[in-house]
Amino acid sequence: QVPLVESGGGLVQAGGSLRLSCAASRIFFSLYTMGWYRQAPGNQRELVAAISSGGSTNYADSVKGRFTISRDNAKNTVSLQMNSLKPEDTAVYYCNAKHSALNDYWGQGTQVTVSS
Image (cartoon, rainbow, N blue to C red; front, top):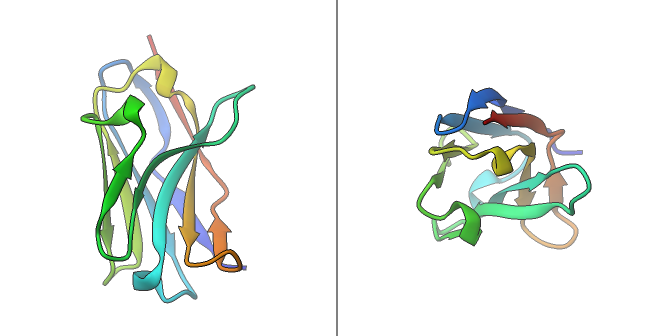
């Protein structure tokens, strides 16, 4: 099992900001596509943002212009800066590291709650 340790979740008012971080170990981090997913109660887990090993990024339409994903290969970390948060952003956010179908790992999740 590959540990992916998330941090930075919490409670924030609408319009506020949070920064999520995920630290990975025991993988060749720079080769992995790193992603943030979220799951709200009653909903399926959905991709929020991803960053490839080469630094290309991909965002869900609902967060474009508000969220920014970044990675630091020297520190084996990936971050998600979330600005202009909305109540509909409330969910458990999960860090994902993927290199292949067999090398696909998840963090334990961190709760983000946005109050209106």
